Image (cartoon, rainbow, N blue to C red; front, side, top):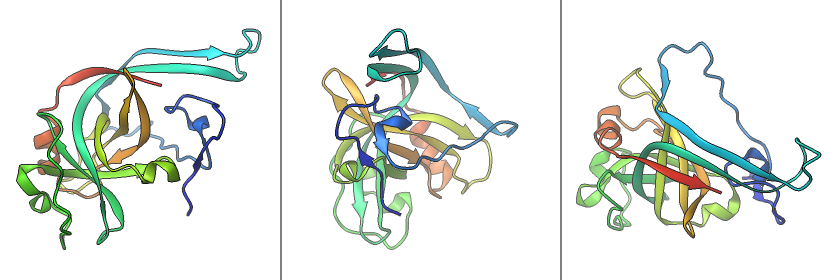
Length: 193
């Protein structure tokens, strides 16, 4: 399935489904007892092109979230054909080695950095991004050891703010390895445009 394309003209903030040309996936967690969200929406604002059209075109917008923030490196894994996220609760980790691992585990992460999951880029343009990113943890599940129990968004700096470039999910990485990073990550407020 081809990735969505970013809009050529501004249409919506990066955190909005309307910011890309393509399909979106909406997950329904209503009634799922073991899902909890550890995020607070501090502020959400949009700037309307015409104040008389409350559901009309926007010219800007911001979303301020307070969540656990993990500094990560995103690196393409040719062996797994995916974008792996190596996290560190204490700051942006060093560039990970280019060697590929035969197993997706934290043991593959060099210099003590931990494989915490996968980045699904929002658009074909964002696939090209490799480097320092931040993961905002949105939801977690108190479920199985190998479950896809943590999810969130991936953002990059954009001036004094941040821009969403993808979705984070645990992707089968062992939960105890992920929790070691996520549960030590500080809560921060980030403004996403």
